[in-house]
Amino acid sequence: MNLQESVSYLNDCCKAAVDSIPKENVDNFVDLLMRKDKIFIYGSGRSGLIGQLFAVRLVQMGFDVFFVGDMTTPIIGKNDLTILISNTGHTVSVVRTADIARRIGSHVVSITAAPTSKLAHISNSNIILNIKKDEKASSLAPLGTIFEDSVLLFLDSLVPVLMRKMSVSEGDMRKNHAIWV
Image 1 (cartoon, rainbow, N blue to C red):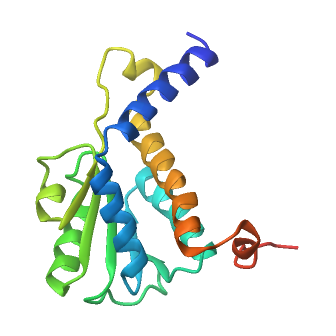
Image 2: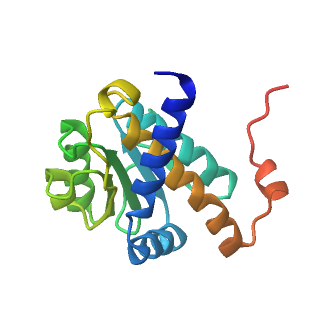
Image 3: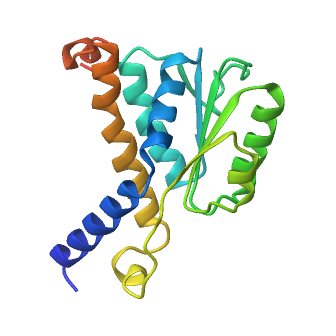
């Protein structure tokens, strides 16, 4: 087992997972991002880190974005979008956030690999990634690596789509980039 084998395996698995998302689900997600007042993102562990990376890009494009659980995050409202990320769809804090956000009236989108999970059931919309499960996964991509990397690839690939729809350039984004000098 070597680095190239791992990279090749991850690349193939992640591309297949992102390709498994139906186009209409992607289009609906982009539409929700464009028309909702505020965007709230949450995930636990590495899924949460992937959500935070997406939040940074959304802020750089001019969206009003918050990460659930931060001390400065306001209350979720009715015309807001809540994006929740969980591989299993059973992470208690994520499912609980979905339940609360949905009761408030926020549109809840789950990004998960588990279409029959509690999270998928509670959510208004789902982005389901079909994650390859085989004997190589435990040694080349342990735990949730394929899911997490696939979500990162999916969300980062949406950035240029949103940029075009909003007529936002990289220069525009740079104005909202946190640069520490």
